[in-house]
Image (cartoon, rainbow, N blue to C red; front, side, top):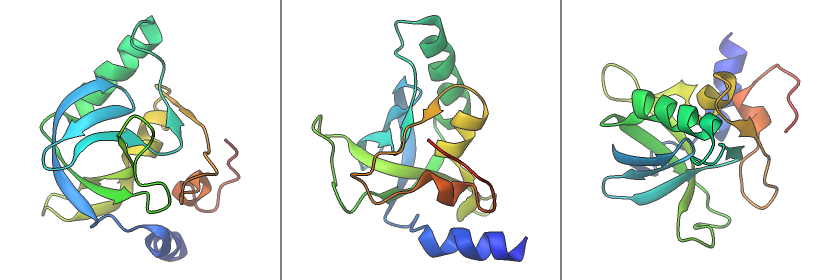
Length: 137
């Protein structure tokens, strides 16, 4: 277990930005106060025009709305073509610090409301969210 925590912390830089989620447009895209629009790295949620997309957005609303999050921002691409910041999103511990084991990108995939889609153009590797597991996107 300790090895998994060490491996995860080697890759995570959740203190690049933090803020409160103010609105959700879909399961993988939302607005963070003080940051702007954020898009989950290496995750694709269904479009909100589909029933699956509605469920994905509802999951995001339940997990994130008015919640403090910590962002590891993509330092390779910065913003995607739509001007959205690409990030790995961490939820907070009860004491307000980042919880490196509560990665929202993984949570929404594990809950079945989005799928992994590894974008080789960013700095992230979804396998880092699943230490010790064989994961392919």
